[in-house]
Image 1 (cartoon, rainbow, N blue to C red):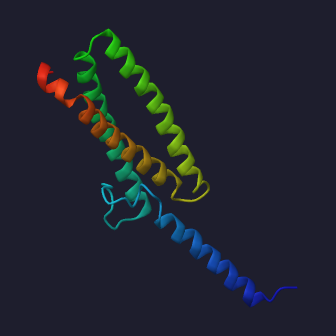
Image 2 (image 1 turned 30 degrees about the horizontal axis):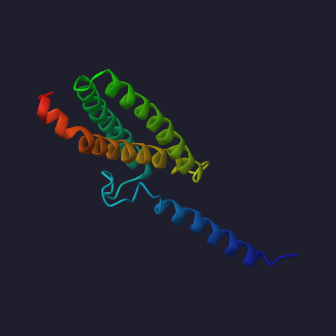
Image 3 (image 1 turned 60 degrees about the horizontal axis):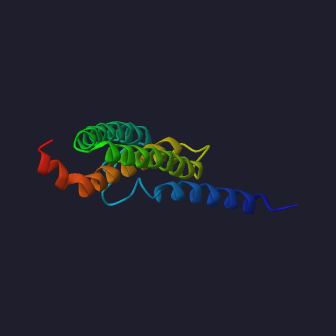
Length: 138
């Protein structure tokens, strides 16, 4: 039968590892993450939810402007790429969230991932199509 004190120490250590693990979530702690000020978990989750909504709005606005600047083939290609990207983003963020499932950080991790990937997709579309938007003034 294991020593009670050793069991308590082991359980405490495991609990600390679980807490520390959530601190190292990839998207939550990225240098460019918008919600990296000290706060409670609930405040940080609310911040990432709000930032995800902003990033999604910005992406959708750029996407619509870009679609208006393309011919039919270009619109079809971008629409297909965007649909596939959305599937990838959602699957990728679900996988990252799964690392924390059952813990209080899971929701925060999900929204941090969605925000970061959406923000980076906006940057990517701006790089790819920005010249076209400038040329056609749309």
